[in-house]
Amino acid sequence: MAEVVIVPSAEEAGRLAADAIIRLIARKPNAVLGLATGSTPLSTYAALAERATAEAGDLTHVRGFALDEYLGLPADHPESYRAVITREVVEPLGLTPPNIHVPNGSPDGIETAGDDYERAIVAAGGVDLQILGIGTDGHVGFNEPGSSFASLTRVKTLTEQTRRDNARFFAAQNAGEASDAVPMHCITQGLGTILRARHLVLLAFGAAKAAAVAAAVEGPVTASQPGSIIQLHPHTTVIIDEAAAADLANADYYRHAWLNRPAWQQL
Image (cartoon, rainbow, N blue to C red; front, side, top):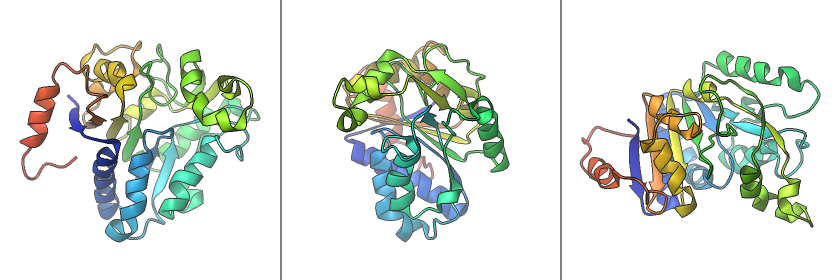
């Protein structure tokens, strides 16, 4: 089962996730990170930016692969995930830009973009630690409900719920209904791609994520809840705040297990 850590705040969750990443980089300077976007991982990236250079040393050899990208959104659009990753990860951490990869969301060549991305991940030796968020409908990456557990990087159609959830990021660029500005399609790592990562770190905050977290951690393993793939992975850490933990039946045990973990045990 996943290790579930319930913390008081997103900031504390970010510090714990950053701890795991810093330890990874310390023992493997060219570690491969799986990079999520959206608001959820921001506290992790902020903690890394504050501490990584001092505690992990030179980060110029770290490599990374973003989970997904919008289809047809220009790379220089402020909400393209290429721009977001550059702004929130590459620049604050001082990473080497050519080492950080984002799926190609250009319509030109989209037929082969998924296969190209898969080959690049394999050529890098695979992802060592994959940061994940989870959508209110249970999606991870942009793998919406019904996605195959064997799926690889490919084009997907976003649900209207996901587009509404992401509309806040586009509000400043759109005078009308913000959700209309969110692209209908994306290219995303598949659930099978995500499962190949050596360590999954799923973060979730707020009451709106409580049902999705409970389904992922304690519900049946089903394509109707893509987040439930974490139950199939041998090394998954779930770091959530109290609000996101509200629907967990075994929350008291998770707290007990974390407080009484062996001295040698780390995320």
